[in-house]
Image 1: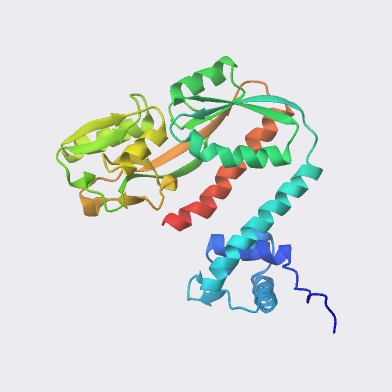
Image 2: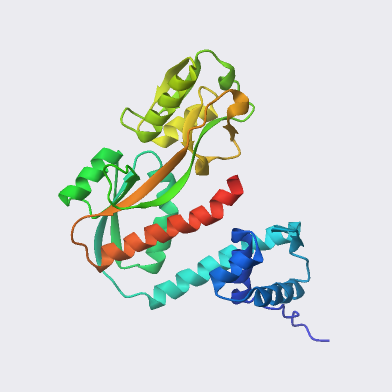
Length: 299
């Protein structure tokens, strides 16, 4: 009897990409558009993938598909496989740009959103050094205009920014899970410093709703607002993507007004080179993928 282990079948990356596309778009038709295949070809790929893994991956419904428990498990593996594949191929096929790029990101959510983007960019463009500058939106906008920062991501203002938004997501109220801060009067809120878009929007809707509040904690960094909220010392207005197991979404059921959407844009100084352009394209595509993947999870 042979002592060699039985070889397991390989998970085809093309099938994995189609599977992820279905999960992220919600149905076969939109997935077919994304991967440039017909709906019938998508169905055949799903059937083949289910035969390979030996499990049912979707529960078909009238207007959309829903993952089975096995499908949810496979989705995590498929995304990791595709991410590793794309990083490897980008590493060897991308032009060998060199140089240093100055990237400006906002105090509020730059530390949360940017690390994964930088990690992926470093894998695909290892010869480009990125210097990161944290600052408020007004400062970042000014630095790009003056040419002291190559690229910056900041809050979008239609009256000041000619370039379009690259990302939008709901701005929401968050509180500590099982917390009591929402029940206090006046309502304690943790905000960014004056001049922050999130702060201005939060104070405006609270005033319009006639809610008695007090600014309990102020910080230029989003993490400090989140820390105060996790400690159940206040609630905070932040993008929904920062939600965690320790925080819950507070809304009209808790007597709070809606905050609306938070939009971000990317600006570049007047003349940029291939290194700067490569990072800018990477940031835009990363936010696009995050939006497609994340907003359905928080819907």
